[in-house]
Length: 231
Image (cartoon, rainbow, N blue to C red; front, side, top):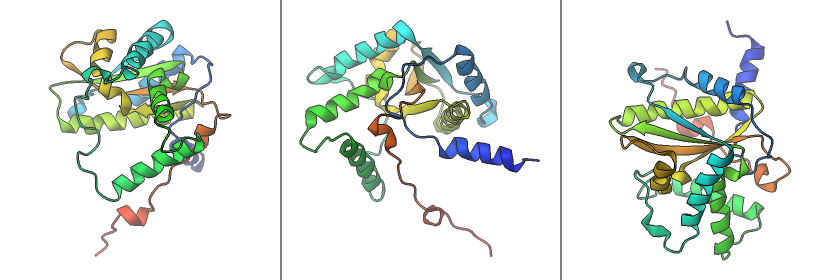
C-alpha cells in the first residue's frame, strides 16, 4: 500500500522536473548516475525488449564532443548536418505551433533576446551543445531494427531518468537538439552503425541564480485532453 508520504514524494519528483538550462560546476557522484540508471531500467518495454543504450560523458570526453558540435554549429551553412528522423511535425497545426512559439519567446524574453537578435538566439541555442555547462552529458541511442513501439518505450525510460534524478536533488534537460549532429556524435563516440541517435540530456545541479531557470512552462488542464466515459 502506498502511503501519502510516498505519494507526495513521487508527485513532487514529477512536478518539480523542469528543463534546466544552466548548471553548477558541482560534480555528480558516479554512484548517483549508476543508481539513476538502475532505477530507470525498471521502465516498461514491450516484451521486455529494453531498447535503450546510454553513453555517459564527463570531463574531457564531454568537452571534446561539445567542442566538435559547436564548431559545426558555428560554421556558416553547418556542413549539411541534418537529423535522421523528424522529432517535430513537418506541418505545424494548432495548438502545437502556438505552444512551441510561446515557450521559445518566453525563454528569449527572460534572456533579453528580441526577435531581431539572431546572433544572440544562435548563441543561446548553441548552449545545448555545451550541455548547458552540466558536468554530465547523456547520449541515448537505439538499435535501428527497432520500430515505433520501442521509441514509445524509450520515452518512458527517459522520463524515469529525469524523475529519479529529481529524487536525488539533481536536474536535467532532455535535448532533441543533438539529433542534427548525429554524424559528429557517432564519430566521437565510435557508435556502431546499427545504433541510431535518439537524443541527449544534461544532468547536474541546476544553477537557480540564472534567470533562464525561472521559466516554468504552462500545462493544459486535464479537461482539455481527457474524456471520462462513464456511461
